[in-house]
Structure formats: C-alpha cells, structure tokens
Image (cartoon, rainbow, N blue to C red; front, side, top):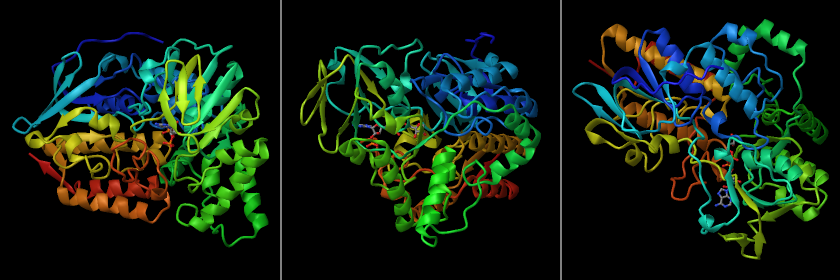
Length: 539
Ligand code: NA7
C-alpha cells in the first residue's frame, strides 16, 4: 500500500467531495474520468469511511463479499481475492485501500480534515467550503459522500465522564488491539454493533454484562471461507449478476416470493423459515413470503417463529424472554451474528433488561440501574448513530440567501430523490434521506447515485448551464411519495434509527425510500431522460 498523502489544498476545483468512504472514492474516480477537478476532504487518517472507523471486535458486513463490492471496474471484479463469505472489517478496509491505490485516488484526498461549513454564492454560482484547518475552497459542486451511519451517538445518560475505568465506543474503536482478558466489562447497546461484538468480548472478558434497551432480531451468519468454484462462477457471470442486483429490491437478487405467509400450512411456513435461518442470509428471511412488510398478521408468524428459536437456544427462560423482540421483524434493522444467542448460555455473560430496570447513571465504578450498581473495569458503548441526517446537518451548509440545511430540516429531512434539496443549488447527497440507501446493499445504491450525479454534471456542462436545484414542488411531491409508501408498511410501527427515534429530540419520520432500488433507479433515470424534470437548470 502506498502512503502518499497530500495536504495541498487547491483554492478552486470543480467539486468538493466530503468523505473518502466507498461513495467518495468512486465519485473522485468518476469525476476525474470526466476531466473534472475534485478534492476529497476526509476526517479520518485513511480511506474506507464506516469501515475505517468501526473497528470493534467482530465487525463484519451483512451482505456477501462478492455482492458487497464495486461493479464499475471489471478488472477489479476479476482480480480482487475475496476470501470469506462475510468479510471482516479489516478485510473490507484492505479492499478500500486496494481501490484507493489501484485508481491512484490518494493524491486528491486530504485526510484528517473535517469540513465544517459551506456557503452558496448565487452570483458566482459556487460553493465556498471551509474546513477545521481553515482551508477555503471554491467549488462549482458540493457533494456530500458522508455516509448514513457516520455520526456516532453516545447514550444520553448522566455521569459518562465520571467513570474511572476504560471507555470504548464501537464506532470510534482504537486502532491498537484492546485486551479484555480478566476484565469485568459492561456493554450498552444491542444493535448490530453490540450483537457482533458481544460474543467476541465474552470470550475474552472475565465477566460481561449486557445492558439491553431493545432486543434485535438476529440470524446466524454461517460465515465461511469462499470456495474457489463459487468465486469462479461469480466471476464468469458477474455482468448478469450486477444487472440483477440493480433491478432487485434490496440490491441483492433473491427469488421473489409469490405467496402470503397466511395462505400456506404451518408446516410449509416453518420449513421456509428454517431454510432461511439455515442459509445465513437476511434477505432470504425477509423474502420468504410476500407480506412481511405490510401485514402485521403475516409478520407475526415470522416473529413468533424466531422467538421459538431464541427460546430453543437460550437456556435461561427469563434471559430468552428478554431477548425476544416485540416489534415486527424487519422494521428495525435485523442483524447477522456468530454465536450471539448462544453467548447468553456462558456463565460469564449476564443480560440486564433496561425495560425492567432502567439505566440511571454511569458512576465512577460502573453503571447504576434503578435496581443496583454494577462495577466494571471497562464500558463499551454500542449505542449507534445519528443516522441518515447527522453527517449532513453536522456541517453548517448555507444555501441560497443563507438558508441553513439544519434549520430547513428541523422537522425531518426534505429532499428530491434523496439527491438534492430545494434552496441548495449544486449540492448533491450520495444515498441521502429519501433514497433506498440503508434498506439496500449500500454499494449498489452508492454506485447508482455517483453515476447519476456525474451524469447530471456532464449534462450541465454540455448545455453550458451552471447550476441545478430541486424545485420546491418536486421536492414536496417526493417527500409525500416517500411517506406514503412508508405508510403502507409496518416500518413506522417500530422506534428505530430509520425513524430517527434513537436520537432525543429528532423528528419521528421514516427516512429511507421503501420502493426498492430497481424501481427507484427507473425513477431517477426517467427524471434525467426528461431533462432533469423537477430540477431547475440555471445558466
Ligand atoms: P443501533 O442499531 O442504533 O444500536 C444501538 C443500540 O444502542 C440499540 O440497542 C439502542 O437501543 C442502544 N441505545 C442507544 N442509546 C441508548 C441509551 N440511552 N440507553 C440504552 N441503550 C441505548 O447501532 P449499531 O451501531 O449497533 O448499528 C448501526 C448499523 O450499523 C446497523 O444497523 C447496521 O446497519 C450497521 P434502542 O434500540 O434505541 O432502544
């Protein structure tokens, strides 16, 4: 790996890209292909975005490696040696670094530099972008490639700073190894990060206490090394597979279900669930029947079946009961795990349900609930993110007439296609709220947005136009459409980061687009084909 890094910040570029994760890296490559100049600002010291920061033990992706990879370069597809079905964080980070080197990206990335603000100047039709190091760059386009899960959230409980032991946050894990051997460890949070790290920490720690507010549905990942024949098969059929990914609902092709969970016998239903459970694939589970997302009764069949599995695996009945989620399956992000439920059978692991005994405070010695104080040598916060909007509103973005993005979105994000926002010309979001994003294989959605944005810029340049901005009417109609579709589903029934409810004070509104990546792509392509319908194109 080369380590050349630049701190040369050009005063003027065609595009400022914020973030050097999978979105920012592909954007840079794509814009260079169009002979545009770009600079990427990245807060971290390396590429990889979420895979740079989330180094907690057990971190893995929940989409298979051969599908969770770039499709824009056939050479890259053919040569990259994926080893595992579900690669670990270090393996994905290695891939990100390989891409950065292979496409010579680093010379236009400024690391360790957070963008703090950006203001639109309507006379010159440019953005002035500022960083924490007082860089000031003028750019025609500002592209937020800041990720959906990148602004971490600590739990809002008093006393965190008083704890005398070691504190860790899963999304800001140290780069050096953390050794929990012989330690008494407490962990708060049982989303994906908790579910993946708990079994690994439990193997090391003398004692592990898990503080759970809401249980997750989790499926065994059944991770394994990839076989040479399956790699060869995929490489031989990649073009067809990529097409199927793009046309699918979630960015991973599946056999589309044809039956309702309510029209089959109990035996047929249980057999389908068992098959999905054995397959180690979340999409298989969520697409066993047609109506999980829309019918509570259908969803109940799956929920009850998984409850049965949890009770079968976890020996202590009270722990098992506490681990059984009550919200509909899929309405909060389900997890893929390795030995998650089994871990609760270990004598050194204890589950504390915060529903029964709420968290009161973090103390010098540990954590106090309404019942008692627990003493720890280390506390791990696996408490998630200000998802989907946090990284966007965290930058002081000022559009036309000083309009603040943060204030404009105070009652929930307002976008057109999840790509642009009215009042903010030449601002693009990659996988922004109102697009399928987190409900899909992120790489598929990232590539689609990057290609659409690059196409829009090429269109402006061809036509001699200087700016593009979503119209208020198109945006209102899109927000209404996103909400209407979500309203047909069970998603709004759960409190989740999809709804913004994990962040106190955040407006409760469903943020991703549930229509599926295939349908969504068609809509975006139609908009472009009709001369960027719903956008004002400005000379
Ligand atoms: P998640 O899925 O948001 O999980 C965070 C967890 O932390 C979740 O169990 C929360 O409970 C819990 N939490 C958050 N705040 C508190 C407080 N104040 N008290 C107690 N418990 C709290 O984040 P992850 O990092 O695990 O996963 C994020 C995504 O990354 C994941 O879905 C994958 O897509 C990859 P809650 O559910 O809010 O009751």
